[in-house]
Amino acid sequence: MTAPRLPRRALLALGAGAVVAPAVGRAQTASAVSAPFEVRPLWPGAAPGGEAVTVQEQVVLRNPNGDPNDTAFVHVRDPWIMLRRPAQPNGAAILMIPGGGYQRVAVSKAGGPIDARLAEMGYTVFIMDYRLPGDGWAAGPAVALQDAQRAIRIVRSRVAELGFDPSRVAVAGFSAGGHVAGLLATRFAQDAYAPVDAIDRLSARPDFAGLMFPVVTLTQPYAHGPSARALVGSDPTEAARDAWSIERHVPADMPPTFIAAAADDRVVPVENSLMLWQALRAQNRPGELHVFEQGGHGLAQTDASGAPAWMGLFDAFLKRDRSPRS
Image (cartoon, rainbow, N blue to C red):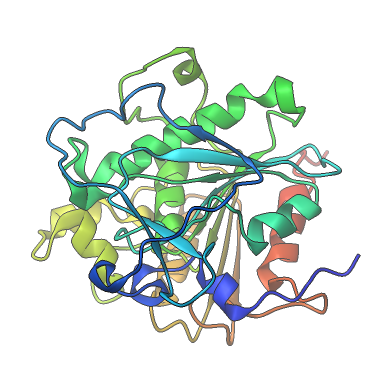
């Protein structure tokens, strides 16, 4: 079946906050949408470390006059994880982490064309919302990592129920969500929060990582400004920049990593992707880098079917035989 052509707006929906939305003060509150998918909270009670948090969560329209399902979550207090089941499962699961420049999370409980296409390809798709570092959480810059670790453990807790392979659980992050996914792929051995239930005994290591037009480095001159300010402030030390730069902390057991970006990205410089690729090479870790000549932030290049060009490449990467050669 030929997939519908995805509009550029749909591709940018997963991108950085500098592109995707008007200021919150000008945004309209989004109307309620009927979610056709299963949505569950990430945490069994209140999210950890919220004693000093006073902000009120909002759901806003990314375009005041646009699609009522084209939403962003601001000042997230109750993060969630959503499941889209494939009609014909291929045995693998993907945890999607959308972007938003660490200012908001560009996601909809009505789903979107990216997760729809991945499910059509057979993937059991989970989409997560996550908390933001500027809202007063005790974990500070690590708050989104807490949610990502909890989310992938929830994915793993549903292996028997949903029937996917526990060794084929990938994370796919977009823009600032790529930074969250990068944290998950590099810091899975560091528990970002104290266990709250039996789910937290499961591994937080993704089997594969896909980073699309990702925020990677907080070092100058290639840092994405809004993400860097949200994570380490407006006048950070070099040590703080280094601490939250993904390419500086690639472990010897980092999962196989797929990276895709456009050379003409004016929001997150493509050097972010190049720096991570070089770090993977330095650690002799398996990885694949695709730099498209055009596509901008959102990587709007499409294939003959109208699907994002990176998607078929990522699918092939996830399915590659990596068994030892005799």
